[in-house]
Each structure stands twice: as structure tokens, then as C-alpha cells.
Amino acid sequence: MTELLETKSRAEETVVLVGVVLRGDEEWRARDTMDELAQLAETAGAVVQGRFLVRQSKIQAGYFIGSGKAEEIAEWIRENPVSMAIFDDDLSPAQGRNLENTLGVRVLDRTQLILDIFAQRAQTREGCLQVELAQHQYLLPRLRRMWTHLERQKGGIGLRGPGETQLEVDRRRINEMIGRLKRELEHVRTRRAEQRRGRRRHGWALVSIVGYTNAGKSTLLNRLSGAEIYAANQLFATLDPTTRQVELPNHEPMLVTDTVGFIQKLPHHLVESFKATLEEVVEADLLLHVVDAAHPQVETQIEAVHKVLDEIGALDKPMLHVFNKIDDEKGRNAARRLARQFPRTAAVSALTGEGIEGLQDALADCLRGRKVEMRLSVPLSEGRLIAVLRKNASILEEDYEGGTADLLVRVTSQLAAQCAPYRVEKQAP
Image 1 (cartoon, rainbow, N blue to C red):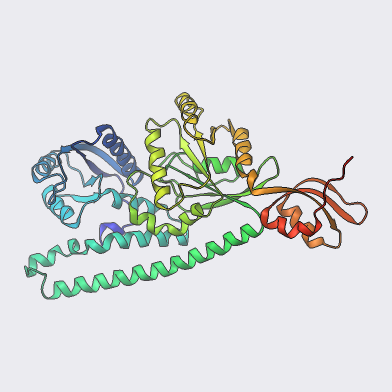
Image 2: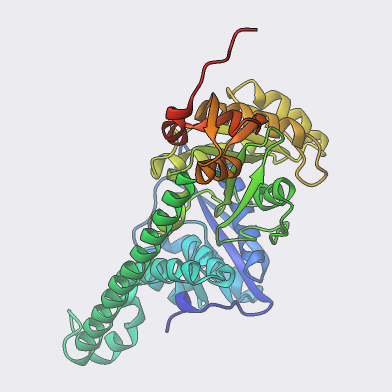
């Protein structure tokens, strides 16, 4: 098996990072993604020994960075031994092969590194399936690189003979595995859709937390729900989605789902593989976009999240921007500035709890349009309907005298239709 399918990083693996700035590109953006690449490498268990940021007019077909720059990095590696070179962009199979031959060490690109981290973090069956699908989709077009030893043995133009046979066998097997994984994930999507329909029958608001990785999404869900979801100051600390029930101060119940964090240059096929999870975002009534307001490139992170939301068709959904980490002075100042750019915002510290009451009020305002206020007079013989109302409605007033339940409730439009036969107008004093 290739390095792509390894699920554990070697302890204390030493690496050199390589990025590219093309003519006309903004250098600060390239440096920012290189900083992020360093964090990803450290998250995977590597030690970064050096960095190269290559300036060139265009991507070179053979070596990505050109053979001359590759030789320069190879000389540095000979003087500063490392076990791997990690590139900040996707490499073609030919580029990866040429670079490994020149550099004399294993070569990974950004996608392979992210997949390695995802493989370490996936805990549930669904998460493992999605990561495995993304790995195989990445591997399929790169199979020829795995069989370079047969090229040396047979030397044919088209890999004639046993090499071609084995290559085709491996390609067929991977296609079969991709098909099986997609079928299994389709069952996951069907089950999730059934769960969502059940939640909607209960009238619960569905809220999805989205945001850049390490913005504080899991910490915020813990703060809102009192749960104890794993949260840490690292990239992709949690991968599998978690749903918790939260009740707002106005007794509005909602289900809040913490989803996988986004990142710059998030591979497209990774988004495709995680469709079963990301459908929670697409089907939500409200998106809670958690932003690390203290991050020096906060606008770039917001832009990256919006880009992924647009890719999955969720950018136009109702959204509340939550500027987190206002316990940091930089975060507090940035939150004030950014609040002027978006229609619905809240500023909090998920760590200390500051601003949580304001966030709860903002959530109640955003969800208020989902429900209508009704005055009902329900016979006590309709115990099932009364039980449904007690579980799924906001009961503002109640009186159970005279054989009826006289209620003032706030209910969803679906539940309002069931209650319509018992609706009464408020009597004038």
C-alpha cells in the first residue's frame, strides 16, 4: 500500500515545506497558507525543519517548481537531512515521481497531508467511510506512480506485459471499492434524511455550526448545550459531526450540529466524499458561522468558509456570524469592526462564556419567524395533541379548568395546521 493509505504518521518525522508564489499573486496569502501547512504538518505528528517559498511565473509541468529549484532544495536536504517534503498544492503523479527522484525523500502534497489527519481523527463508521472514499478517489489517478519499478524492469512504452496487467487489476479493485463505499454512504445519507424528517415532525429548529477549523465550534457547542465534546487548540480536532439539543431562554428548542471545520484549499473530492455530513448544513434552518476573530487573517478565513458553503449550495441560507475569542483584545476589536459588515452577528468568548446570553437572544430572533403564536382551547380528551404541544411548542400561558386546556402557544407552521380546529380568538376584556 502507498503512503496515502497509512493511517498513522511516523513519530517525529522531519519535513521541509515547499510553496509557490506565481507572478501577480499576493505573497502574504501564500505565506499564510504556508503557516497553515506547517500547522497541518505538526498536527500530523511531523517536525518542520525548513521552508521554501518559490517565486515563478507559472507552474512547471515536470517538477511543479522547475528542475533547477528542485536541485537547490535537494542540496539543502543533503545538508539538512529530512524524511519528507510536503508541497502546499496538489501535485500530478508525474510531478510527484520526478520530485521524489530528485529530492531523494518521500513527497506529499497538501491533500495527502489533510487525508492523513482525517484518517487519524475519524472515529465513527460514517467518518471512516468518508475518509476511505476520499483516499481511494485521490489514489486512483496516481496508480501509475506506484508501478515505476515495473517501468524499470520491462521498459515498454505502454507498460506492456505483467506491469500493465497488475496495474489494471489494481485500478479495477479500487473502482470496485469506490463503488462499494459510495453505496454504503448512500445508506448513511438515507438514514440521516429520515432522522431529519423525524426532527422536523417534532418541530425542532435545525442549526448547523460551520466555520474554519480551530475557530472554536466544539467549544461553543459545549457552552450552549452543557455537553463535553472533545475540543482542543489544534486543526481538525473533531471530524465526526455531533448533534445536541439546546433550549433557549424563551423555551425555544433546537438541535445544534457541530460539523467538520473548513480550511483554505480544501480538496474538492474531499467535499464530495463528505456530502453525507455536509447535508446537515444544506438542510439546516440556520447556519451558525463561528469565526476566530483573534486570527490575523480572519477575513481570509471567512472567505474560505463562504467559498465551501457556496460549493455545497448553502451560502444563501440564513446565517448568524458569531465572532469568537473576544477574551483576546485583538478578537474584541476585530469583532466590533466585522459586525458592521454582516446583517446578523454576535460576539462571544466560548472559552469564558462572555456574550453567550447575547448569542442566545440573537438565535431566538433568527428563529422567531419559524413559529406562529396561537390561542387554543383543546379538550382534555385530546391528550395526545396536548402532549405533543408540551414537548414541541413554547407554552406562554396555560389553564386546565373546565374540561379544556386553554393555551397560548408558539408553534411551527406544521404543528399550527394540526392545532387549527382548536384555535380561538382572544376575548375582549
